[in-house]
Amino acid sequence: MQLLVNIDHIATLRNARGEGFPDPIEAAKVCEDAGAAGIVFHLRGDRRHIRDDDVYRLKKSMKGVLDFEMAATEEMVEICNEVQPELCTLVPEGREELTTEGGLDMKKVFDDFDNRVFPKFKGSGIKMSLFLDPNPEDIKLAHELGADAIELHTGVFANAPDDKSRKKELVRLKEGAELIHDLGMMVNAGHGLNLDNLPRLIEEVPHLNDISIGHALVSKSVFWGLERTVKEYLRIMGGSS
Ligand code: PXP
Image (cartoon, rainbow, N blue to C red):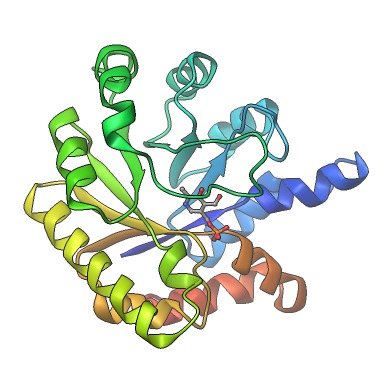
C-alpha cells in the first residue's frame, strides 16, 4: 500500500491571489521527500486549480508515481499522452461540481472508452485506472475494457451519516476490492479519506495499492506542516516514520 498525495488544493490556494505561491511543485517535492510514493493531480477542463504548466513541471521534477486524473476529453487524452505519467485515472467531470461526485457509469461510457479513448493509450505504457463506485457490474465492464486498475470511490464511506451506513458501504468496498483483485486489476482508493477514517478502511478493505488523499491532508498541513502530515498518514498506513 502506498500514499499518493493529491496537490490540487495547493494550486487552489495559489490561484486565490494570482501569485506564484504556494507552488504545487514545491509541495509535491516536500511530500515525496517525506515518503509519499507519488503525486495525484486533476487537470480539469476549466483549469480551476492545476494548470498545464504545473503538469509539465511535475513531470520534470518528480521521481515517484504521477497519477494524472482527468476527464476523458480529446484535449486531456492528448496532454496525458504527451506527459506520459505512470498512471492515468479517468473520472467523470461536471462543470458545476465542487469535487468529483461519484464514479464513472461504465454502461454509459463503455462504447466511447472502447472505441475512442483506450485505443489512444494503447502501447503508451501508461497504466489506465477508472474511478468507480464499488458496483460489481461497473468493475466487470472496466475489466472487459482492459483497465489496469480501479480506484474505488470512498466518498460514500467517508461521508456516511452513521455507523450502520458506514458498515454497509465498507462491505461493498471490501467485496469490490476482492472482485477487482480476482480479475487481476490493481485496487486503488480515494475520496474523502482522512486521519480518522483511513484506519477503518485499511482494516476492512483488502488488496489496497494506491491511496489517493488530497483535501484533508492539505488542510491538516496548514496546522502541522506538509512533512509532518504526510509522515502521520504513512504511519497510519504502516509505512515509515
Ligand atoms: N480520487 C479522485 C478520483 C478524486 O477525484 C479526488 C478528489 O479530487 C480524490 C481522490 C481525492 O479526494 P480528497 O480530496 O477528498 O482526498
